[in-house]
Length: 478
Image (cartoon, rainbow, N blue to C red; front, side, top):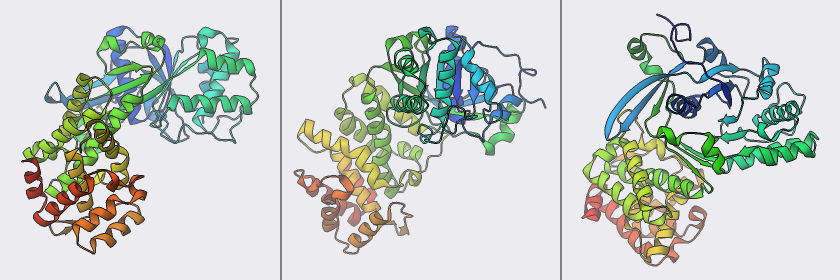
């Protein structure tokens, strides 16, 4: 059986216009797929040169397959469960700068290069004081990029039209701003001159971004069946969900040069991405966190099963649409569409997302993902968000560590576990609720000060402990 490459498959060749730091599953199932779509549907002509950002990686495997790989997209699409696959051909070649830094820096001399895309993990956008301009290569990703930009600045004598659009995908807040800040620090450390600094500031665009697509990665346990289906060997198969979202904060010019809209891709260009970040945290992450203790104590193990259950599914939908969405400052149709997409993602039959895997550090997750919705709801409505408070009561019950006689493998900071172990020794739901809600270390505030909150949470908690989650949840919903 043939191995996938450009000799065994007839594919397209594109102009090298994009330098991509990172060859991992996420970028190949997310950014490279979008570039592939734009090449097909908008004549983007975007060829990608992949740069391996650390000394260990997949560049050799990519080069063995001439940059080709098969992408499977699995999930709910237009209301139906769909699995589809396609060969992605936008990657033209890959470089390991640890083996050939000269070839890496030569990309700076290519007049066609316009974009830099990266995903070097959250730790990748970091400053390393030991990096030097003459290193071969620099240790950090920002150090490598600074060296490339300086080479480009020198090659084209600071031409304003040879600046780059830099779109990082690392999961940190203000990723573009932070990357630019570190590059300017290197410019100062390495004494690259005020003209280079001005070129960076005036002629290069650093975008802040928010990315969203679940990418399970290489489907090792299914490769025998996949290879049989494909009829060729592919060592770089990657799986992703159908849903995708890329929010790019930058000037209007970026939107004009990156024709995602013409392809129907879910790429949002904005001058302020904060509402979208808040939307994702409160709706996607908040719904997960609100669901976990309710669904798990109800007897459900997976996210998908929760949506399939008429009682737990109803609770989750009502929490989302009635308690969370009203706290957000985006158009109603956008919030409803995003929420519906989230529920479709939760229903994905191709993903087995365990509730217990989401339960790690549930107290801090509730604080960052759900509590802001609680506080904003009270502020806007002058009443309490009942579903989110039921979830909070379920969370306190969850930390009792018992599920219908079976011990729950709780995972959290030792101080959190010690607190709940001590409180639940009293076996008094009311006193446990009071102690938990007044724990400023947990919430950053004393929740008892919110009128009626302690009473409502304590009532729900007593119902859960006395009658069990199934009875308590049915009573609550009815």
